[in-house]
Image (cartoon, rainbow, N blue to C red; front, top):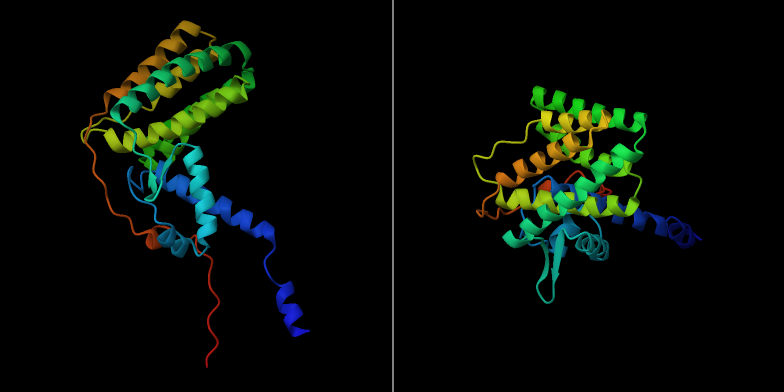
Amino acid sequence: MAKAQRQSKKPAAKRAGTSDERVHLDLYKAIIDHRIAPGMPLQEDALAQAFGVSRTVIRKALQRLAHERLVELVPNKGAFVAKPSAEEARHVFEARHALERVLVERAIEAGSDRDIASLVETARQEKKAAEKGDKEERVKLSGAFHLQLARIGGNPVLTGFLTELVSRTSLIIALYESPGAVPCSHSEHLEIATAIRQRNRARAVQYMNHHLQHIEAQLDLSNALVNVDFAHLFKTSAPRRAAKAPT
C-alpha cells in the first residue's frame, strides 16, 4: 500500500513538458542576451546538471533551438550555439531589409490606430529605459518593437519569419559587433512608429532602412569565445532537491 502511495506521487507527464518549456526559454534568453557566445558547446551533461533535469529534456530543448536556427547539432560532436558566418550575416540583413519594408507598409495599410498607438508607446518606453541606463530593458523593448510591428500587419507567416531573423541578428551582433560600436539611438524606433502613425509610407520605410543600416554598420569580423559555467548561469532554474534524511 505504501509503495502504491509513493507511486501515485510521481510527477505527471505534463511536468516534463513544463520542464521542456523552461529549459528552452532559459537557454533561448541566455543566447539572445549574449550570456552564451556564438560557437560555444552546449554539453548535455553539464546542462542537465545545471537545470536539474534529464538529458532527454535537454535534448528536446536543443532540438527546438536548432529548429529556430539558434543552435547547431553536429553529428558525433554535439550541440553548439550557432555561429553565423559573415556571408550569412549579410544575407540576414538583406532579408530583414526586404521583409521589414513589407511589414512597415502592411502596418500603414492594415494597422488600427490603437495598435499603432501601442507601437509608439513601446518606442517611448524604450526611450525611457535608455535614459535611465537600463540596458536590459532597452534591449528587450527594442526586440519587442520589431515583433510588434510584424503582428500589426496581421500576417502570422511574416511574423514567424521576422522572429527567426531577429533572433539570428542577436547572434550576429554578439559575434561581429565592433568594440567601439555605438548603439542605435532609441529615437530611431520612435521615428519609425511616428511615421507609421502619420501613415507616411515613404518616410517610415526610409527610417526603417536607416535603422537597419545603422545596426549593420556596427559589425566587423572579430569574435571570441568565452567559457560559461552553466551551473552558475542557470542556478535559479534548477528545482530544489529535497534534503537527505540523516542516517
